[in-house]
Image (cartoon, rainbow, N blue to C red; front, side):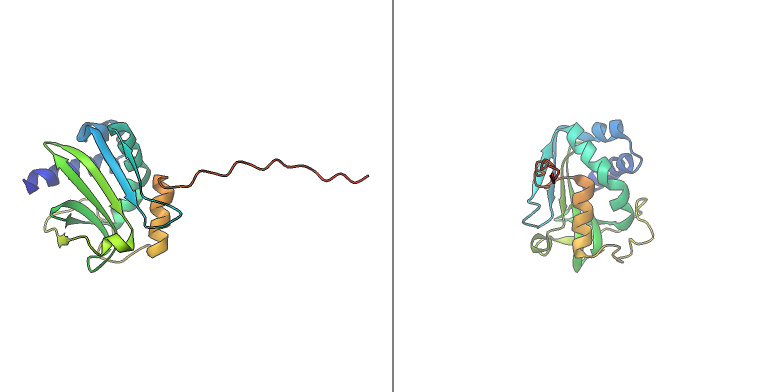
Length: 170
């Protein structure tokens, strides 16, 4: 039921906010997955799987994302929203099975955001900060860059260093 899912997601997010790696792992299914879609050709959609890998991703971005988000229902399931529901900047959706989070989807792809069904969540929220009223602390590209930088997913492979050869003048 939705109330149970919300309790699981809230406990999971509390662990992320508090930097509690073991707590995050306890709320994740062993085969949990994390999916990030920023909607940029240079940063294609990416995913990690396994409770520890997902917990690491959550720890990298949760403290900076949670204060600017508010609870919503994403396609009928618990989630978080950055921005206005009519023009979301980013959405995090959580799939819960039993008492564990099995999938986390973070989407900041404008092409996909328009197709996500968002419903307001009526209830207390301990994670929202002063900007959760719909004010967007990030612009479109700033949010995508912020998520990319904090989650490190979708980054192209770094270019190998070019050896430096000093100029010799005889």
